[in-house]
Image 1 (tube, rainbow, N blue to C red):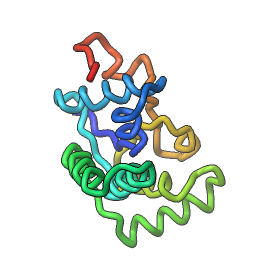
Image 2 (tube, rainbow, N blue to C red; image 1 turned 45 degrees about the vertical axis):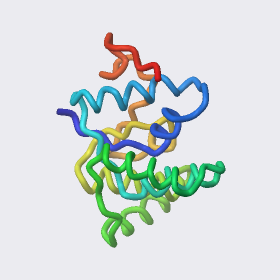
Image 3 (cartoon, helix red, strand yellow; image 1 turned 180 degrees about the vertical axis):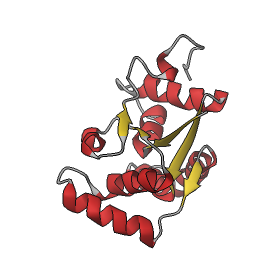
Image 4 (tube, one colour; image 1 turned 45 degrees about the horizontal axis):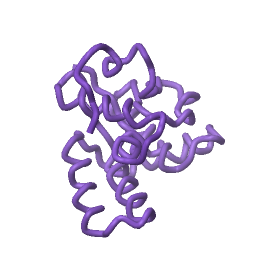
Length: 150
């Protein structure tokens, strides 16, 4: 099974309004549920997801429930001092990489995960990581399979 680190934006696009990424992100989650890929994430992904929902006006209780569901779909990795050290190095070395994405990248590097599934191009310049765009036609979730309409 392929291990991938998943960015919060995949969950956000999958649950959000109509968008170019919506169905592709749903397909990523469907593929993981079917067992073809294993989703892994920093605990920061869950925090980021809940933060964005609450910032968008989602009820606190609903945001917490949905964040728990996101966390349950992933093998979660701790955000510890070792990850923080790598985060700060990445931020210093990559001017377009934001702090949260640096946490995700540092988590992937520390866990030996080579692929990050994200719509965010900021991961493209991080050595040791290959970003897989949810729209990538060669990805396992964009092969023939069941409909992902919700």
